Image (tube, rainbow, N blue to C red; front, side, top):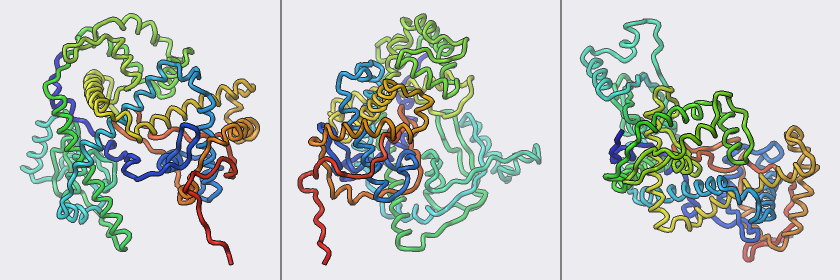
Length: 509
């Protein structure tokens, strides 16, 4: 089973890498320093806006802002107080997870450096795309599993001079015609977006074949569209910015794909046929089990307890039989099953298709492993360039480590105080009775090591919009940790102002 990894590694969507902005791009500020840790304005806004806040901090008032601030500071204090000898920080799987988070951020920084920064936009193209950016297309479509089938379909439609809808209904008048609405900001793959929003299209226009991924093509036909005009100066400016951002993302993806293609040129992956068959049997139940069971399996491996899994699935016994077998050879180096599974702890597999049948699992697994090895090569270059020391990468890694360490410490603290899992579901009661005193003691303990950028805090604005943000096509899709529900304190009466950040207000006459 041989795969020459030239085009194979490149044919993946890199969409969300471009959408992840780094602090250096945003000219962010340090909002608060807590001993050797810090929270930036960018991190504050992401933690507040990219996840669901609890009811007591969901508004956009100054009190809500203070609660958010105090919650994030409390999380840092709990992590700081846990110290470097925390059992969680000694856990090898946790260390691999944090390393994986860091390396994902390094690859995103690589995308910014090798893709986004090299984009040059054409003013004429901006205007051309702007003219159609307000459209919402209604399209009929068919998906096919080969280029030849898609080509034959297009030829048939043109030869017979019939629409896609007419063809589908010709065999069965009651048949449902697949259709969807697509806007400029719809989360479609790049190839669809380019097809619809690169120039003016007409009702009835046939489009395609459009390559979605290897062995997956789409033929579309415009069933109709509406056009929302940008009327005010504000709307016009916002649409122009949206067009520039989207074009930058598309072009950055193209530039970066060439960089990756050059990096991967000539590299080769050979699977051991017998081991691959056994790994299909081993992995398929994991990837097709319910999300709850997947979570239990992960936690069971992390904290050494026995998750409730189907009786027919014995993870550890099957793994012991397989772990020493040669799984594949990459660039002359043979990987055992154990080496591969260890790699998954810092880079979970990312499948190119969100949904696929069990019969498609072998092919999707091959592609996912190829993409893992591609990311591994990119990560090597990122380390060589020192991207593990980039401030935004360091900050992102520390954010995740501190958030999970604080969560672990809170669970241990509540357990020591006899709080059951059932009781802990009542978050407000638990905060008031147990966590407020705990956090209050930490604020007092570390008050001389807390410095607040008062001017930066004063300028921050919150929204009232509930949003949960995640990325696609990356090993760790959730962008920020869950909001820390540890305090409802709404005063800033601790620490001291960061030098030079005090606000000078005019006295009232």
